[in-house]
Length: 321
Image (cartoon, rainbow, N blue to C red; front, side, top):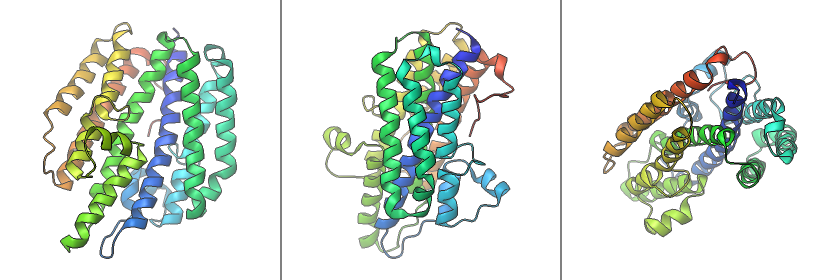
């Protein structure tokens, strides 16, 4: 397979996954704000730090209020990781190798882009419309991935699609979990305990994980149980453990995989060693930062081995967060 095509496939699914998970993150955060009790505090600027875009926000002089942050994350074309930009880059990558994919994929991705373009402003400016518009993005993106899984040969090209999707998914799962570490709860324990339960329930709902958590863990939503489930459960497809398993499976069938496999196994070892009982928010944040660094190392190894001809990123592929 051509390095150019492999890179475009990888980034197409990373961008689509980024758009979906940014939509999930925004919906979750909006719900958290509605549920916060008196005395709790959450700053929108912290959300930007969680998604790793604080440097760009400073460069663009984005104000730290809800309207400005929502515009930046949903529709700002100066932000390469906004929902609209991510879908645009996925669309442009798809345009260059349409012959590799099922015929209907281009139509679905183009339709997703037109939907996002036409509704992004409404989602940015109205809380009442935001949930429905962003759910529309999530549903349309899921239909694309379902079509790929059900109508594309699971060959080398498909492995690069899975590789990009699972790297981005694992990274965004850690960021969605990390939002709760930024919430300052009230000092009154009678208010803080139920508030924390609602926060973690919102996190599970953001990842469509609540029902599976209830089935495999229990009906009580406790912070350490949620964190352990979302990081280490081997079966739920949005956990870091499951994504790393998928990544290793993809790498196993690719040639010359030694460095990328080494990085993946380093991530595995670090995840296995994590002791998650009774973590303070600041320690959890440090753990999640390390997981993100490990995922970045896997990406770096994959990029160096398979996409080295395009490391200047002069085209549509490879606009990293």
